[in-house]
Amino acid sequence: MAFAELVGVASMAPFMALVGDITILQRDNLLAALYQQSGLTSEYDFVLLVGIGVLFLLIVAALISMYTTWKLSVFGVKVGTEISDRLYIHYMTRPWLFHANSSSAQLTKQIANETGRVTNQVIRPLMNMNGRLGLALFFVIAIVLYNPLVALVTVAFVGSTYSVLFLFFKRRLKENGRAISSIATERYRLMNDGFGGIKDVLLLGKQASFVESFKESSLLFTKSISSNLVIGQIPRYFMELIAFGSIIVLILYLIYSHDGNLGIILPILSIYALAGFKLLPAFQQIYGNVTQIRAGIAAFESIKEDLIASKNYVFQPEVYGQESHLVMEKNIKLHNVTFIYPTKIEPALKNVNIVIPVNKVVGLVGPSGSGKSTIIDIVLNLVEPNNGELLVDGKVICKDNRRSWQNNIGFVSQSIFLSEGSIAENIAFGLQIEKINKKQVEKALRLAHLFEFVTELPDGIHTKIGERGVQLSGGQRQRIGIARALYHNASVLVFDEATSALDGITEKMIMDAIHDFSGQKTIIIIAHRLKTVEKCDNIFFIDKGQVVDEGTFNELLTRNQHFNKLAEHA
Ligand SMILES: Nc1ncnc2c1ncn2[C@@H]1O[C@H](COP(=O)(O)OP(=O)(O)OP(=O)(O)O)[C@@H](O)[C@H]1O
Image 1 (tube, rainbow, N blue to C red):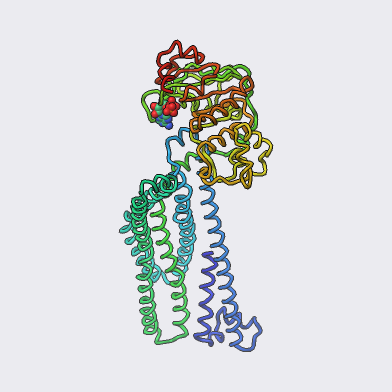
Image 2 (spheres, rainbow, N blue to C red):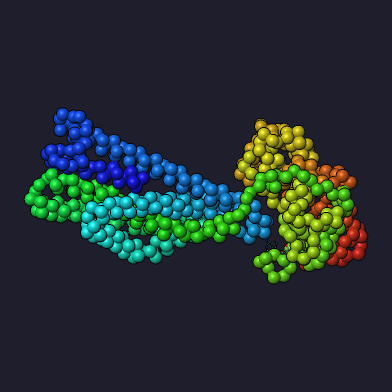
């Protein structure tokens, strides 16, 4: 591109020389030789021909510039989207503990905001800057060859002016960049919290405080962004002024030194003017790009670690989409399991030993915070024990067989996540619409005692349920979660406080449905209401991260005082 533009500009010189003094065609030079060769009889026709030639070269140079700019832009955007793909894959494949300890607003910001900033403020300016540097270098070399003194003075003056400006604003640019990153985090948090907790916001009348915080962040945003824009743009006008001043000085100098001979002055002037016309914007763009990069580098820094971490990772959809099932024949065993959350000092589980025989119904009970959900996370292999192991039929569950073990499990948590899609999409969660088995959905709905409710809806299983299922009652949401666990025909069903949002009658119906599977599926139930686990084959009583007792409901009731107390208050 630089070369093409240089040729375009340089070709103006002979044309201007001809226009200034057509008699050069009578002398001994390259143009005269070309004129002789052309066979033209009129010198003016030759000027016209040279004019057309120059125009053609300029068009070619412009086309090459357009093509290069287009390719550079596409490349920049491609790199940007690849970065966002990589980050999305990186976050989506992180283990449960990573997500339990990070904020979704922050992750969304990293992908939606910072990647865009890195694309527009680092990658694209970087490529543009390289192109412009190449162009400037070509032009400077050309002018050095033409007149070293002019080249030296110009480069020294323009270069040092921009360098001084950059050094002066360097810190400010970086600080602004950092501020933009942290304000973006705050804005994503305000949007997430505001929209996510809208019911509480409305009820508590906290709109004003949210709006105020948002407006405050907007103000800071405007300040930082506009400050960077101004720093990037201001020198342009100053430099343009200098350039025009230089041209006027040059014209006067040339007129005096060549006695007003336009024939000599015009080509020199046109070369300098055109070179300046190309060089000055190039310098300005280089400066603008450097300031942009300086400000955008904060965005890059905030995603740098995640990008490095994802560097050599090749996403293999087949690993995650594996459909193999680890069929359990004997039991699930937690053997001497100790687990400490990375942010805690005290272990959440201490030397836990549990055996869950195949096709039995077991319950986990115990006070709040005793470690029941953590035990379930170990069984689901969402977290790995620090000590001890999870065994299925004596086989240790690890990275290699995790997928096929998890394929076997249907899990209903205390708070079901529902997406904005239809009932069918929520039951066959994560499946593309065309892959959803309608019969299976209906079967799951029947088992979860939702079938009648759904058939009465205008669009049946295709009815949309609103973001996070706001158009459903708490109990209906919970039953969608239960239907989801049943959809995949899992042989192990885990219910973590799954029926706590249901009324007594519905809970009984669902518990009866769950117990209908006894003898056919392995079922693990966590419940606060001890009635829920009354029919379990075995109950583990958990306290302070340890299994303190186990037995049937009646055994525990007669033998364990704490259990007895829990039962009394249930
Ligand atoms: N992601 C986490 N990071 C740090 N600590 C955690 C995390 N999740 C749970 N804990 C801690 O681990 C302990 C056990 O929590 P767990 O959720 O397993 O209890 P639980 O018996 O299921 O309680 P509940 O009946 O109230 O749901 C608690 O002290 C809790 O604060």
